[in-house]
Length: 403
Image (tube, rainbow, N blue to C red; front, top):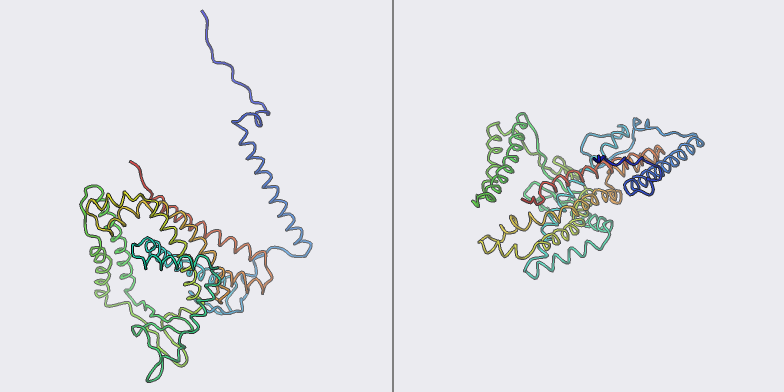
């Protein structure tokens, strides 16, 4: 009687790291990692040796020294006696402000322009095509300078005074001048936190209602109204809370005093120029992403939805866009990243973002080029990875889920 046993296991040999396909890829990856670490180590050792020969060292103590310069647009209190650290924080907030406003505005412009390019109206389609081609093929720096120049030819604050003023405030509350735009400022009194909390809950409730209505439509085919219930949920609770709490939120309207406006919020010319230029420029690229995403959907989808009696608006919001988002969102993430990094051109119009504060005046005053550049790189790396993470999470949520 013959007994069968498992064949003896082959012993591992070093030659398998090269000749065995099971291990070869790991070998090459390990070699590449070692070479990369060796290169980085050489560069760092060379850096520290040069610093040591020059009698220098990497130190961030300069961040605690007085900055000694003013910043025109700030979101937090700042004076020239504050430290370089606080000046850098102001620059970070200014960068985030223009990036946030730019991404929102560029998305709105891009969606309208992308859909408009596919319009059956010949004039609308051609106008959107001209907008896209004009802004995509001219460097963004030129558009920043052009829009900054346009803002400078607007009326001066003096034009708003006198018995017969040459310019008037929009709705009696907003003033467009060559120094910037002056808008009303909310005044937060006691009890305003309750109104804000109610409004935040209303926003959550509105999105919850719309998600429920969409789920009900997909599961049962029953169509609930979307428009007016969303508006009621969004505004009615907050308005009721506003009056119940005794109108705790006021408005500080800009007023002309002397040679300039006082009160309200001052959106200065550099911010306006940078915001509009980045938004319009990036919006042209997003428009092409939107157009490509919509055209990636088969025309049969539209025809099938129309045969069921859906209106064009419903077809776009319920059939076309949900499928097109999987094509639109990935390139839009790149456009958001480009907009954020292009905001470093702010120094061209005097807007003090992080590049103008930490990478500009602070670097020149302290001479700490390596430290400042490393901090700049770290900030842009963090903000870019954060934008990518948020948008990728949204992309995973809206992608098509197969049954």
